[in-house]
Picture 1 (tube, protein in one colour):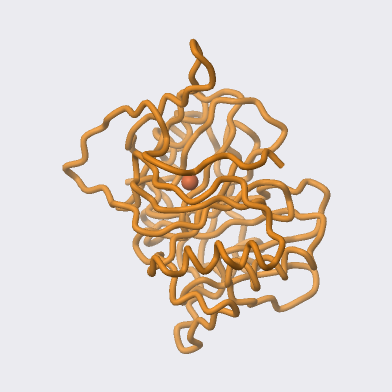
Picture 2: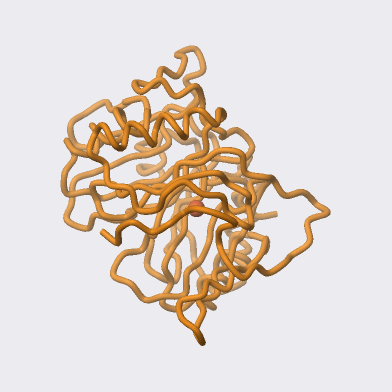
Length: 291
Ligand SMILES: [Fe+2]
């Protein structure tokens, strides 16, 4: 058994004030920060899902993967050990994250990875989205998905598949020229079509984008309008993806990496058959800007 869901994400950002405005007013996340040093945002009944601390990296700072209980945590530790990776328990960090048990290690690109069980729920306090978003798709599917750059894609795929137990959903050969394409790999650990995708490219940033999925299609359109009103730069226009069928657009965050804001993705089940795609979108997702 591997990890069961993407539980939380941490970003290191140079402008905390800009991130607070962006996350609440544009993305519609609920501010759940308890201090000035770390911003925390809610998208569901969990006490937080996205954190931001101040720093110059403007990138992903840590990834939190959830397992259901202590036995599952020990099973993942054993899987990692079998591929030569030692994950260490950290009680102080577990307390800070508000979880019962936690181990840490790094993925082959150097990104800190935390595996935990027992996240804090604040179910009695309903989610109130400052932008009026009606709800985010989480639950068994976890927080959303992330797309990571990897200098050594084979090592990253081994870490996420053999170490953490992810399974292949599909590949996309992204055409970058007449004779050249980039092979993207999409991995799932639950019904969400992909929780992680790997881009084989040695770029300065770890994170290409993270994705949040809303329950109501209308909320994608309303977020698109908010981007225009609030001066948020669109990276890719509205479109639909070939593999997960997500209807979405991409916007730049204040840290330069992107967010995908989507609706309507299909899910994968035990009868899923791995396929390949020749493009990443059936329509739309036109690139408007690279920064
Ligand atoms: Fe995405």
